[in-house]
Length: 308
Image (spheres, rainbow, N blue to C red):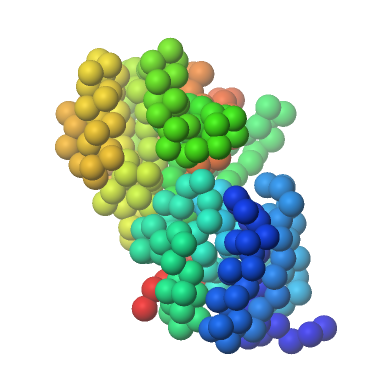
């Protein structure tokens, strides 16, 4: 087998003008003197398959050219590997997705290839936490999914689902977000939930809950993915005017200042009931979950390449 100890495995998740974008990425990699192999995903399902292939072929640096969902697939593959082998692998990102929230947290900016690849080449590694959602599927079999950024339960998961649907129709991310907010008016605005967070029991109607290992698309802005804790924002039901006021605070980075937002910091969240509420993990919808489920944190389990 070829020695891939120092060679990067670059997993490209295409978006936009694929040929032009791929050529530009490879040009910068060559210019920076990076030794790499380049693979391209054909679909969402192929990201995990290709990540597993790179791991099995001995690559110690795996760089995902994609967004939050692609990174989520990669870390879930890494977490299936034995700990000793996983600790020899470093994960990096070149932001290129519909949602790049986790990359943005580290100041990796989409389109700034020279700076991003330069930072990755410096190989500054930080051990980071992962959140994990434990649940049962429709066949009542125990399942779990790791997350880098956040899990959304309720309205925001619904908005993200609408945004993805409208984006596939409209093409424009900005336009799809605006249309999604408009369509939100006609959707359910609150959900009966029973939650256990630390010593608190919340048993009431809730608009949305975000459990963040990272910034949570602005809903858990104080979260850091190396604290060994999860940040939680629970938003109680509000009038429509308050909803739009909350969205403005979200956009301007002051979400926790809204009077309907109740923040927590914890190691575990137990969702005993959340009827009809959609659940999204790192921006990807996983649907309605049957029965109770819980969210936990696993400290310092992934080696992540961060800026200098």
